[in-house]
Image (cartoon, rainbow, N blue to C red; front, side, top):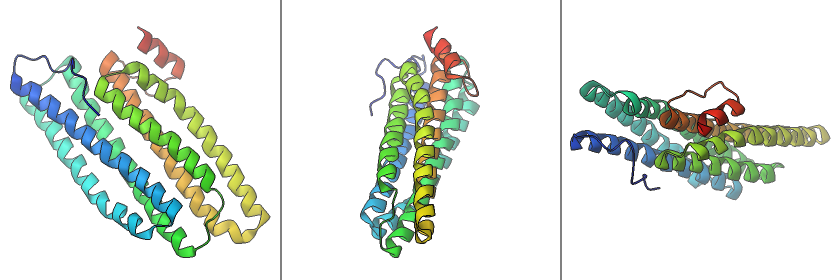
Length: 240
């Protein structure tokens, strides 16, 4: 996704500083695209019982970890060399926080891939795949939109993502109740349904991390920390 052309973080006298900030944002978005793809492919591996694809996803997790370390190092060097203040400092600090969320999204994708291998080996597709597909579509949209909000410095879009997080929680709880019903109807379903339950939990966590990224976008743009506040308070911040 393209970075906003009239980026307010790119107006320094030092062209080198501008380039460093742009590179930081570009690398963050590159990592974001990678973990987004990891989650999408993990769900595909699950639905298609594709153990080979699932193994590929698990193997790529190391690359995600390497990108996290590299971006952290780049951000630390900017702080040391440039001693940024105000909006620039908010950007660098936010990237450090958000890259940790991206790494954890990669971890969730790896968990889903591991469960996809387990379920494909067991053979029969268990109940709950409809719920998995529905929630995965929802949280992948949230993650994509959170990255887009970062690229465009769009606090209003970030606020919409925060509102979606509650819906994902409700969908997860409803899906979990459905799976519990399946397990009560036939105890032979327990093992497979528990695996699907863990997939749903991983997806719910992806939604949480997308929400965290959205909160940091609001901090970058508005200069106020909306973590641990209500959506109503975040609305007031964004509306100022």
